[in-house]
Image (cartoon, rainbow, N blue to C red):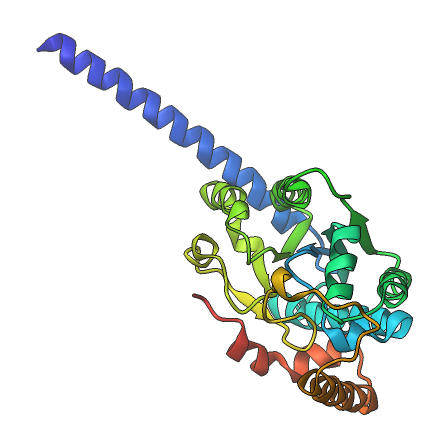
Length: 281
């Protein structure tokens, strides 16, 4: 009986020491965060799987100008959301898009979305618009190459105190669940906001009930069916396709005609709107 009590006592002491160590670690992290001056830049990242978050046809077909427009739209929305979370600090936004350039280009051309030249010009316009906007080609042949790189960057940046927010564009793929659940166990999932591409979110990702930013005007809402892509880009588009392109162009021209506003005023004016679309669960 005495032996059992001694064993239990030792276990209790060990558990107490572990808890004390965890508390000390958390306290140190809080001290680091609270010790940062309010005027210090807040690092915000967007990590995007470009094979699952595909830009809209109306942007891709405009080539260089479409790429610049897409970058401007993305920057405006991400900064507006970030200022709504912490309006005291300046935002330093970095955007990483990982994709199989050759594979995506071939798929888009097969579906009459854009030509090869338009695709290349779009990518050039997107990266030229901002020195912190980076498109990385993972090249064909290596399965899940984008997944591996995004998982590593996600885990690294979520754990460092300088990162205040990460917009994660991988909602279509359950393969990202392991990294996200790992961050959940470490207490860093609060930094993650899902950047929604396709309307259908992977079941395991959805189970995490993370806040979600949906940008229907920027990304395609549905997967491209590879079985349908038999025509070349030069073939005549269907009537429905031509009608959709015309409607997309009108919508984009209306966006171009809207008066510009700086990041701060955009975030303040649309903050209440954000509360209607950034939902938990």
